[in-house]
Amino acid sequence: MITSHKTRALTHRNIFKSIRNPDIMVFATAAPVAFALLFAFVFGSAMEISGSTYREYIIVGIFVQTMLLTSTNTGIGLAMGWRIRTGPLEAVAGFGLLLLFAYALSLASAWIGLKVRSPEVLSNVSMLTTLPLAFISTAFVPTEGMPIPMRIVAEWNPVSAVVTGVRNLFGNVPEATPLSEALPLQFPVTAGLVTISAALLVFVSLATRSFVSSRAR
Image 1 (cartoon, rainbow, N blue to C red):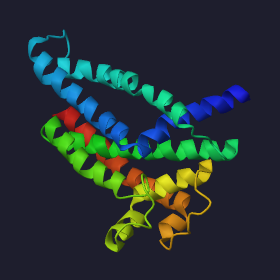
Image 2: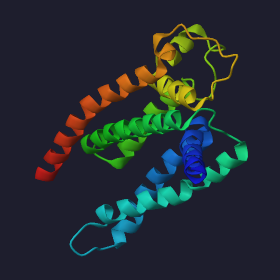
Image 3: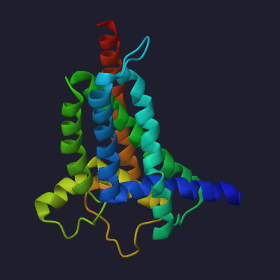
Image 4: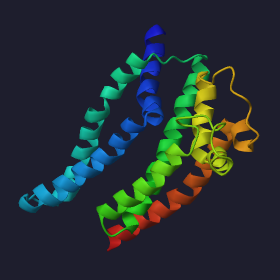
């Protein structure tokens, strides 16, 4: 039981600290794109794979390399002293919310990737959307000190709902934090699940159809 609890805590450190630290998040986003472009267009021009293309062959390698590079986040999380303050059921729910959010985003990214003409376009689109969503939210700072227009955007940002929901489930909300007047932050877990469900409803179908169409071409 103790080992299981520690495993859950370590897993959370790796996921949640990536969301809370912009330098980790930017590197985790930019590095895989940079490596994919480097290997596909620089090394790929000189590589031949029997029965396949080098670009298709290398992507799984990029996935695994990304996991190796970001594995140090666990050590960073340990050094920062984060703890789960609630029980095991809340912890499991928090992990589940994070994983569902990641899955919904991956489907949206898959659909965009199948629609754009080049990986460079996908990289630009990803940076233009993920960075504002992450920074204009409750991920890194409370909304109380933001200018009113930005605060409204941050409070209704779906990322804020997910982040606040996970904080509630893990017991990481400071005691002095005032209750937000924005409805999504009053019920962040519900708002996060609604957002994720809506994204899945849209992008499961879109990504699947785009994938089938790309296979037929």
